Length: 370
Image (cartoon, rainbow, N blue to C red; front, side, top):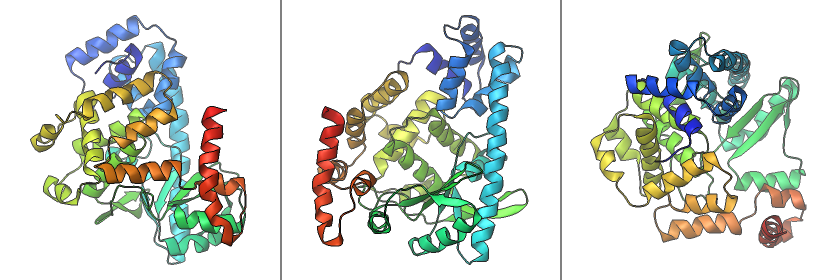
């Protein structure tokens, strides 16, 4: 798959193990780089791979100016990660005292699982899985601990939004930390089905917290990446590290896949296998020959190198859906079903909620045609 020089450089520097050929390529790029160190670092930051790129490059090119500047960005990210991790533990403790189970995933818990520390994976917020029934109780508790809701809508709009959404976003006004509380991992009407079956405990700073089991976590990460069309290389690196560092029971994993989520899973494995040399079982390699996967992978890589319209991205997501029925359901969600934009646009009384279904296409037309 064709990539520009900088993207290829960052992908190579993100590999779990560097060959002699990889090191030679990295050396040649650094000697003949065509853009500034700052531009390279900005691209790495946007793809959430500053940490892994820095840690690989410092082993072989410690004196290079890029590595020196990457260290500065790495240290800034590390400080933020430690702050976020401390806040995660604080929030989990607060909720636990109120008998609210909070299951951490992505962020600090994923970094600890994959790297045995909270700073080697780049992240910017906290993700916690909760029960839907605990939403208001959680907000009541955390509003006394510095958090505010980010949605600027009325209680009436908010109630309608939560019934049709999957998460609530809170923001700590002094610490600058966002927490996404999820009661669903995929939108209720998104045509991909997946539920967490197993959990495991991890320890951060001597405190035990709960996260997803390995097989479920790997499936979830591929679904999350695919439904956002892998716009960050860091998400692909997560797949690579899950496979390289964790004990995956591939038979159990296979039993958890279904017709709605399998293409998303295969796409994630394909990108990791092709771009980061991740070892993949032969059973899944055989499925990578499907004709839809290569063009979609090329589109994803193209989106890293040039601006791609939201419309084309939406079309790309259609390709990971299993059949006509799920594609129609997705198009309904994108074009017709009201989003938070419609609820924020106007506060309609209960008997007129149906009008939101007319406002949605109107706002889309206004956004893309005017």
